[in-house]
Image (cartoon, rainbow, N blue to C red; front, top):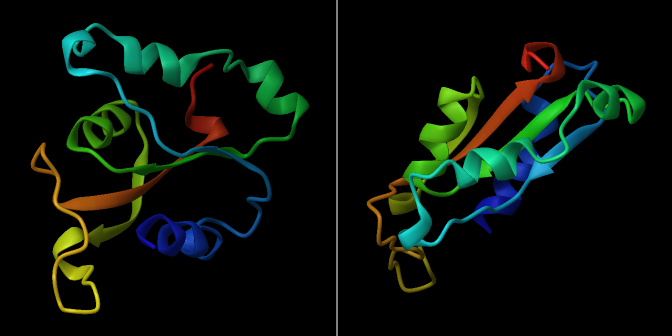
Length: 119
């Protein structure tokens, strides 16, 4: 439900000329392997200006669901388009739908246009 809300809002939040995007849905690195640059390498895998232009990609969007991913994408120049606070997502009995184990309080829809990629 949370990711669907963010995905449905995307094209209302970017410039009208944005037509085609890559979507980074969910990425995760196991705890013993964190802080080794693996997430950055996954993010960059086969991402070249030529490929982005070949497929007429206007940019990359991501629904960042963890503090670590939000920080990584912000460090790489992604901008926040929309946030959904987890405390606001309630089940039918009023309970919070999602509790995280890393302190994440929100899911963030993030965006980086191709012209800001520096490839």
